[in-house]
Image (cartoon, rainbow, N blue to C red):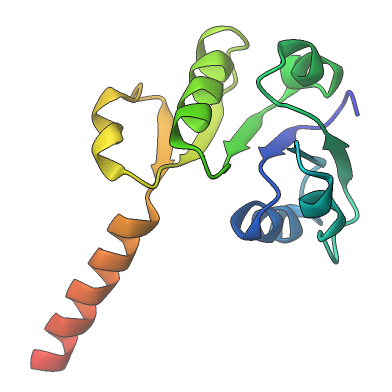
Amino acid sequence: MKNANTIIIGAGRMGGSIARSLNDVANVIVIDKRRDKISKLQDFSGFVEVGDATDLQLLEKNGIKEADCVIAVTDDDNINIFLADVCANIYDVKEIYIKLKDSRKKAIIDKRINCICPFDLSLDFFEKSKEANRV
């Protein structure tokens, strides 16, 4: 889909949930190299592509040059970092979000890239809950 303005790379639980939440407000394409993950996308009416998103030709075929937002939420931090770097420095994508399992890697990430770190979010939630229960 050449006119997708949001590209989600990774069709796992997080990628699928984000795709469904954006379904009505954006043109969304989801890319994953595993067909079984793509086939599990329920209640999503956007476009899907089975393939390796590290292949720049695949990204270009699916509209990376016109993308307003890329969300890389694969299970591999290094792939997400690579994709974010490519999107920022080659394709000049304005909004980039990546999932990082290892939040220590945020130190090497370009400031233009937004990091989603489930561990940090869980820890912050726990700390806030602990504080709230003390009051």
